[in-house]
Image 1: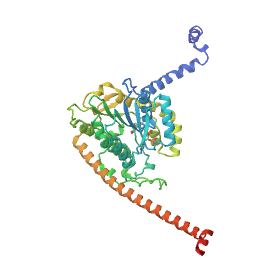
Image 2: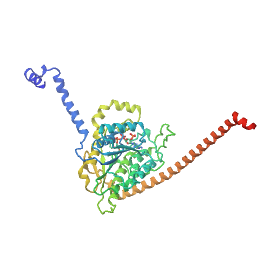
Image 3: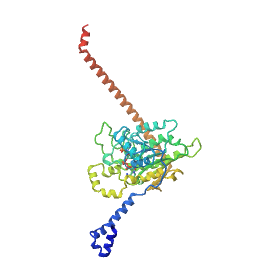
Length: 419
Ligand SMILES: NC(=O)c1ccc[n+]([C@@H]2O[C@H](COP(=O)([O-])OP(=O)(O)OC[C@H]3O[C@@H](n4cnc5c(N)ncnc54)[C@H](OP(=O)(O)O)[C@@H]3O)[C@@H](O)[C@H]2O)c1
C-alpha cells in the first residue's frame, strides 16, 4: 500500500496525493510527541528473578504504582501479602484479590488489615506476624503505601499526628521496628530486600521535627466525626518532603541496624535496604494532589489531561524501578542502602540522609513519638471499652426492667398475684 503511493508521489508530484502536504506538516510534531512520551515513560525493568515461592509483603498494593508492582510480582509466582487499610472482608478488596488471582493465575494473594494511619493497627498485625515458631518466611517488604494530602483536606490521624507524616514515614518506622527480628532471623542464604518508595521532593526538605510534633495541624476526623476536615495550620507546609527525607534517613539507619546484628550462625546479614524513586506517575494519589481534592481542580485536570498524559508515567511505568529493585540480581550482595531511579543506581542528592547522628536523632524522636501516641491510644481505647460496657449494662437493665413490667401486667402474673 505505501509503495504505490510513494511511486505516485515520485511520478506525479506530492500534490497529486490527497492530504500529503498536511501529513508532511503534522508528521514531525507527531514524532516529537512520540519521542517525548518515550522519554517521560522512563526506563523499563529488564531484570529477571525467579519469584516462585518468595513471600512479599506490600503496603499500598491496592492502587497506583503499588497495584502494578503487586500484579507483576503475582504474575511471576510470588506469594503476596497485601497490607490494606480495609479488612480482608471488604467487598472491594475481595473482588480486587479475586481479579488478581484470576488474571495472574496465582492463588497465593492474601490481605491483612494494616491501617497505616493507626499505630495500634500496625502493632496488632506486626506482633501477630513475628509471634510464630518457626519464624515466617519473608523475602521482601515493599513499602508503596503513601499519602499526598492536598492542603484543603489535611487532617490529623487518631494518634494526633499529621496524616502525611504518619502514613509516609512513621508507619514504616513502626512496622519495620517490630518486624526487624523477623527479617534478621531469615536463613543466611536468603536474599531479603526492604524497598522504600521515595520521591524527589526530599531534596527540598527542611529537617525540622517541630512541624510534626503531636497535636499540631488539624484535628482528627474519626468515624463518628466525619464532618468536613479542618484546614491545616500553615506550619504543616513541607511535611510531605520532610516525611520522604525522614524515610530515606531511616532507610539508612535501618540498614546499619540490620548490619550490626551478630547472627548466631556467624554469617553475614542477608537483608538489604533499597530506596526507590519511581518518578512522577499518573496515579490516583498524584491526581488527588494535582486537583487539590476539589471539583474545579478535577475539571482543570481533565482539560489539561493530554499534557499529564505526555509528561507523567503510567502507573505501570512508575512500577518499573521498584520491580527492578526487587528483582535485580546484583543487589543480592553488598552493604545495601542504594538509591534506585530509572532502573539504575544513582547518587543521592542529599548527603545528610546518610548522616549517622541525624539518623540516631530521628530514630529516638520517632520512638518517643510512638510511645507517647500509643500510651494515649491505650488509655483512650480502655475508656471507650469501659463506656461501651457501661452502656451495654444500662441497656440490659432497661430491657430487664421493661420485661418485668410487661410480665407484671400479664394475665398469668395477675392470676399468680391473686393466689
Ligand atoms: N505517583 C507518583 O508520581 C509518585 C512519585 C514519586 C514517589 N511516589 C511514591 O510511590 C508510592 C506510591 O504512590 P502512588 O502515587 O501509587 O500512591 P496512591 O495511588 O495514592 O496509592 C497509595 C496507596 O497507599 C495506600 N494507603 C494510603 N493510606 C493508607 C493507610 N492509612 N493505610 C493503608 N494503606 C494506605 C492506599 O490504599 P487505598 O487505595 O485503600 O487508599 C493506596 O493503595 C508512594 O510512597 C509515593 O510517595 C509516587
